[in-house]
Length: 201
Length: 209
Image (tube, rainbow over all chains, first blue to last red; front, side, top):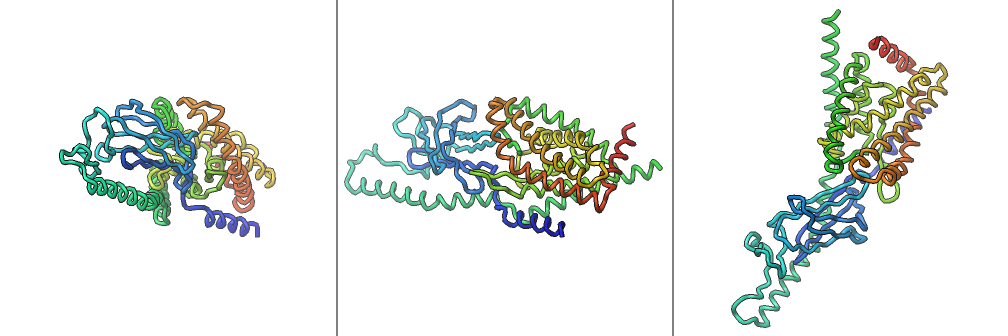
């Protein structure tokens, strides 16, 4: 009776436990117009509010800092055309890091750095310095482009989150695989230990 | 409980790896043929227990079961927990491969300390007293592990007290749950397989003259 209760309790806990793992931190960063936008959250879907995000280049030089809002979203305005490393430390060993490569950086606005548009042909460049006189139609087109880009980003956001959550998913096969490895490893040890003993006898 | 890659300074990671290797060597010497099936079973328990989450506030913590592992295995808990941690890192992405040493040390060493503290109580002929010692060992192992984790974070630059408090209080429910589970397991073993604790401690004594 007692054992049955215990087993039932354990089963309940297994079945009701969320499949996600709260103690893993997920960080994502992507270009959003002229700024870099990113998200910090836990793998069970909770977002990290008010977390400090530090930004470094690949050599470890600090480029700046950002704070996440209540939805775990932060934004950072890049000033250098170098790969950006975003690092968040949520305390108690919960850290996450994400790297935004050169080709993923947004267009830099008004800096002396080399234009990175050459390496990032896909980014949208508002054609301000075009030689031909700016027409109303051209401006409208730019505005439309920006609007469409913003729309696509908004549409992709949930998808991005879902992919991040999917990466963290542990299905039954993974668990069974792990158990199989344990059985195999200890079986192997058992075999060798038994053989050693047999030789000794 | 699992510290992730990159959260600790290199010195701490290296030191943890060296100490964990020493513990592993010690544990493998004590891992006799009689203990291997039990070690595998407990390793599997530890591996799966980490999937059982208890939601607390904004975050959630999971079962560890290092206490029970060491109460039964003693030093041989080191290899059992190491294998579990290795597979958790590979399959679930818990912790990481570079911090495997320090994680093994943080989880296995407190549990082994609890084993030495509770072994005489566990061998008690009275089932209820043994269960009480088992519960104490199971709960204390988690408490000590949080202190170890906070200490490794402190060595890497975090403030010790805030980190320790954060980890400790987040794991309070786990301590209670594991104390109950360990106590129940010890009580059950006492009734259906009373030789589990006695035989092993005898073997332990024989293998360490």
